Amino acid sequence: MTMMNIVTVEEVKAHLRIDHDELDSVLQDNINAATEAVLDFVDYWVEKNSNN
Image (cartoon, rainbow, N blue to C red; front, side, top):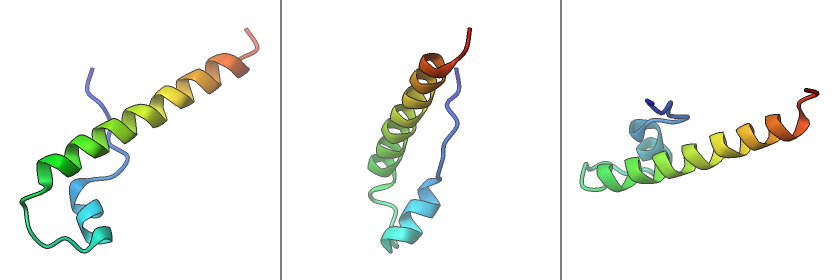
């Protein structure tokens, strides 16, 4: 399954004022982990609050 990213590396770099590419892979790993955590929580919340 392809994961949807909530933000891009470019957006994170702009927010953090990073102007080099040395940390791109680290930033992408962090984006992936954060996205997975958010989506897991949303899935949990929907399951817990569904009326089925």
